Image (cartoon, rainbow, N blue to C red):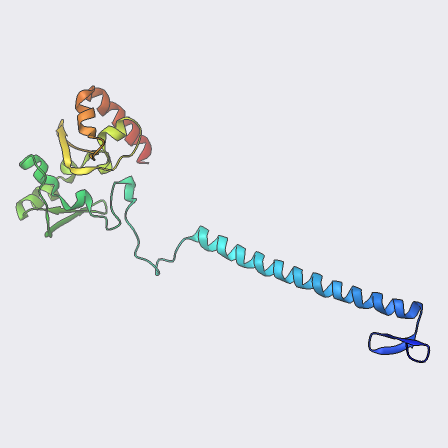
Length: 200
């Protein structure tokens, strides 16, 4: 207090309602500033959140990554689009064993790349690719029969009624063995029905 006055804010003024009013005004101004700050922060967060959601929904830019062909036509493929891990589809039929193909004898069918072992194999494949490509998009035939998609070991195969069937094989499961132990005709029918449904 100075000469009967008190300091209200930066000004010396008589104690009483006027001083209380100024104090209230200061508090109100502070609350308004705080609320504006909170609103601005919420708006910014919402804007950036919306941008993130839109970006996520839109997916990555085509210019930012190499487009994967892993899910092309529901086939079992790596991102390169190379089928059978590079094994020649014709060799399964011609010599009844898996043989690695060569890049100079590559052929593409329905966007999927196959490597053949020779010019003759390439000509045979190009003349009738549907004869040689694996059944069920290269997924495990047994898996397809039980309504699932299992990865395969392309060296674990069987020719069934002129169709190349591939099977899962690891330290725990040999799906070709399970297939052989069951009703093959029934498995084929079940696998065909499920592949028709999931291949779209």
